[in-house]
Amino acid sequence: MATKGHLFILSGPSGVGKGTVRKELMKDPSLRLFYSVSMTTRSPRPGEVDGKDYYFVTPEQFDDNLRRGNLLEWAEFVGNRYGTPKDKVEEMLCSGKNVLLEIEVNGTMEVLAKCPDAISIYLMPPSFAALEARIRGRSTESEEIIEQRLAKARHELTMGDKYKYRVENDDVLRAASEIAAIIKAA
Ligand code: 5GP
Image (tube, rainbow, N blue to C red; front, side):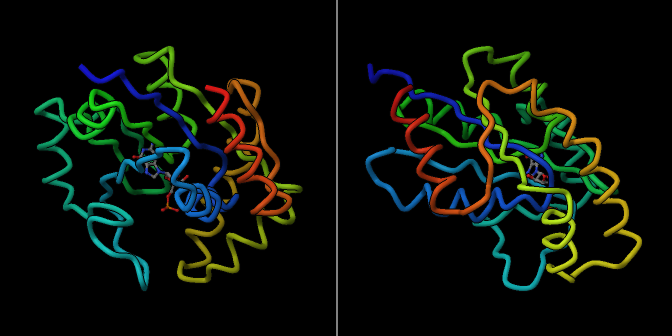
């Protein structure tokens, strides 16, 4: 049987740049890293692809997955739900692949309670102003949703000490190389 892979959680406030850092990490084949695509009830942003960025599902489909115990963790975030499909993660880990979850802080706590060996990495913004600029810069959302995301981010910024590693996203390539070193060390 193949050795089990490691489970890595890349987390941190919305808008900190988790997706950009993750895409950088995925370019390095030596990390043998596989991304777990989440399920969400949120609508796709322009350019987002179903099955690649997220599985975009209806609230009923999400409920159905919850009922059938198909989610490793899930969380509500600014009016939408997000969850990690359990079977896919288990399949990848059992075949010796390293799996990367990119999730928010409450979901991270749920995964750590179930999988204490998971390696948690908290991506921090250089400042709150930088985070706000990124959230506003996406400009695909209404002012109301932006304000809710900022309020959520203020809370998420207090959670860094719950993680095994904290990495500052002052520069995408630098942050990605720091995380790559953490992954290699595991
Ligand atoms: P966004 O709407 O900006 O794509 O995502 C909102 C937040 O939900 C981000 O912090 C993102 O990392 C997080 N997220 C994405 N997928 C999941 C998931 O499967 N579970 C949890 N708990 N959070 C997720």
